[in-house]
Image (cartoon, rainbow, N blue to C red; front, side, top):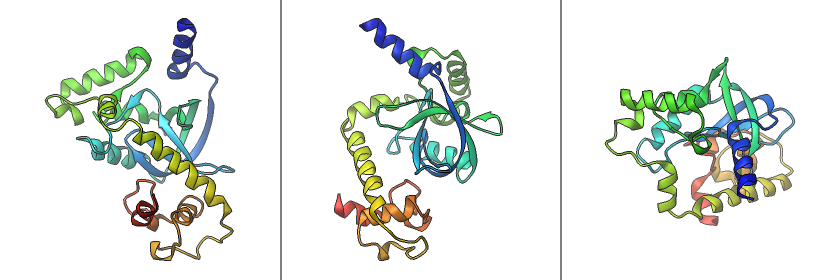
Length: 224
């Protein structure tokens, strides 16, 4: 059984699963390794960049990592090569823009850690080593903490609960039979679900001033 699970893990993380490639527009950058995209005929979807793990937003260089990714891809059409879904239902894959790997660039800039299964991707390991040697990005710190270690120490159930809330709002937003353009400000929203509708379906960016994917944060925080 152990051998079977190792094989499944390797297939998932090393990209040997049958892939699905398409182009989509980046409508939000959640953090340094997660995007919210929109493609024709689909609802907004989250994409987790394969082979990397960026600092959490509360960690040192977390916001810089997010900004680095946003500078490269926000509001742009990107190519996505999906190899699997992760445990949270997000698409998992390689992101590229004009033939340039965004996943690799985040590691090269020192804005993410190499995170291939069992440290199996030599290309990413080499990119991380070069960033460390050049003391780029997070490697300017004396002892940077890996994000997976940080998550173990800071409410491991928090991330799952946030994802469940996002799924709930995405599902509930479908009940709104409203035309885009009628409401554009948080003061006009009657609920967090309605705010999610106008953000994800109508792309009312004014509802998400900080670009973290959560609209009308005071309203949504009060309801949650």
